[in-house]
Structures are given as structure tokens and as C-alpha cells.
Length: 404
Image (cartoon, rainbow, N blue to C red; front, side, top):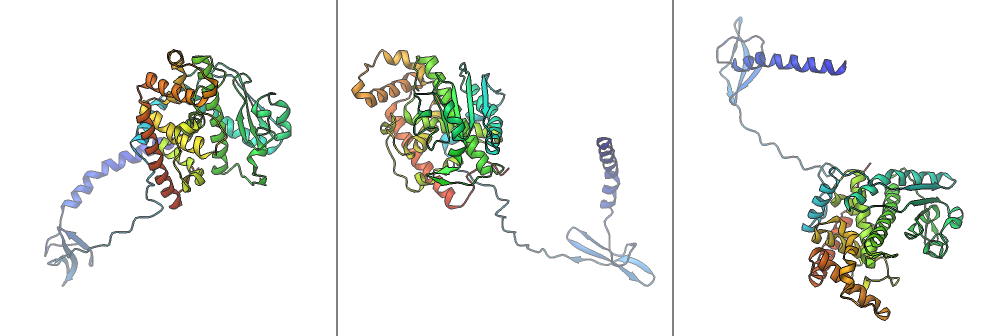
């Protein structure tokens, strides 16, 4: 009924337009009669006033109006559009992500949520479940089949500990018994955990969180989807190279998981990837104290600080996506395993060198990328992006992808 009324009003308004146009054409002339003393009409820059002469009302001779220069209002700081850090590489990724998400549906997967007692467990589980479809859209974009059933445990440390697979890092001191907030326990176990205690602690200090706020909701969503990207990396390694571990080098494993997780945030919040990626500025220490490291130093996990594999690895992974023109490059280098294996000889005493050569050959055969040129370009992208992110932080702009 409301819609019908709206249509009637629009029709009546359109019907009135001809008569309004006719009134506008009847311009006043000096000495012509008018209807109300004091009425004013401005035509072609001349102001006419209706005056009383004797017993008659008529238009006066008119006065030419002088133009007034109104000051241009200063732009509102709140209404001005934010200028997000960008580059040719980021513009390319924006295009790739937009195209990949255009009609993408979540990939099929067998996923079981096991949620422990307590309000925090329920809140974290709700955020993870809401993020799951966007994470599975990333799997579709990367064209990976998720064949392994996955169980996601969410709860406090004491509830989680007995459920962690023995012999994995999840049951080790750095996992659930330790400070970890989330983790993927390996493809053979099909297990991911989100630890309430891990989210509420930082180096032994308690943290107060409000899971109704965007900051804390985004933290959970980001870390949850990061672990699901690890799941996809492991699936790719097994399906393409029969590798039980991750085929990717360490920087691409962790940095690539961050890139994939932020692509998922772009889908979740319906914003460009270039906006979602600003969350990487949570690595403020890496940005404020930036010292460029070398890709070769983060080929294998040697317990480096987060700035190498997680932060710089994120920027190098972005450069790989832009250079390859393919989102799937985050996980599918393992497709080249058979070809690369014919050229390399495994030497356990030279693991890092072997993995560096494996990476270079996989890029060459998979995407025709010259590794030396890639390295130079990736380092330049890291330096440029870090300078932009530092500027963003100094301007006190938000590092969260949406104000909702």
C-alpha cells in the first residue's frame, strides 16, 4: 500500500511540472501590474520589487544585482573519503579479488564445531561460524578441494587440552598448554583450535575484550580464517605433492595465510581488499622499527620474530599474487613438485638451500617468475608498503576494515 501511494505522488508531481514551467516564463517588466506589495522577482540578474503607485501595484524599474563571492566551505574531516595505501600491486590484487568473488560460492567442506562451556566460548564460536562462509569462498577462489573433515574446538585451555592430538604442536608447550590463541594441528589430525585463554592473555597479562566491538570481532575472524588458510595449504601440499607438511616456504605459509585471511575479511565486510589489508598495521612494532630482511632467511621455521614470516611474508605474498596474477599462488606451488623433483637432490644437511631452490623452480615453472627479479620487487613492495602503513598509523586512521 505504501509503494502504491509513493507511485501516485510521483505521478502527480510529474503532472504539475508543465504549469510550474509556465509560471517561470512569465517574467516581470517595469510598470507591469503585480499582485502583492513587497514581492521580489529576480530575472537575468535584475531584481524587481512590487511597489504601490497610487492605488495600483506594479513592478519597479529593477536593480542590477552584484554577484557575491561566497567563501568555499572547508572540507569536513569526517566526510572526506579516506585514501587507503595503494600501489600497482595492490590495485592488481583488488581486481583479482573482485573478479574471484563476483559469483563465488563457498566450497564444500565437512566441518564440525565443538564448543566448550562459558559465555566467551559461545561468543568466539559465533564469530567463527559467521566467518566460515567467507573463508570457504577463498577455497573456491583458489580452486582447492577440501577433502579432509575438520573439527574446530573452541573453549578454555583446560577443556581444550585433552582434545588436542598427541605429538602435535597443538599439545606442546607453545600450543594449547601455552600462549597460542588459535592453531591448525596438521592435516592428518583434521583439527583446529581457538583458545579463549589465548585471546584473553598477552605475555602473562590479562586482556579485557568486548566481542560485540569490531576490534575484537575482527581479531577472532582474522585468526580463525588464518588457520583455515593453513588447512587449505596443507590440502594443496598433499593433493599435489603427497607432502604431509606444507609445501610452501615458511614466509609464504604464514604471510600467505595472512593475505588469504584478509581476502576473507574483504568478502565478509564487502569491501575492497585494499581496505581490509590495513589490519596488517596491527604489526605496529614491525612497521615502526622496519629493517628489511631477506626472503632466503625465512624459507624454513627457525623461530624468528613475527616481523619476518608474518609481516614481511605478508607483503612478499601480496607481491607473489600480483606477479602471478593468480590468488591460488598462495597455495598451489606444490603443483610443480614432480617437475622440480627431477632437478633437485635432497640433502638433509642443506634444508634451507634445498627449499630455496625448490621455491625458485616452482615459481619458474608455475608462473614464469624469475626468482631474483621477484626478490628485488618483493623487497621494494615491502619497503613502500611499510612507509605507507606508517603514514596511515601516524594519521591515527582506523586499522579495522569497517566501522560496523
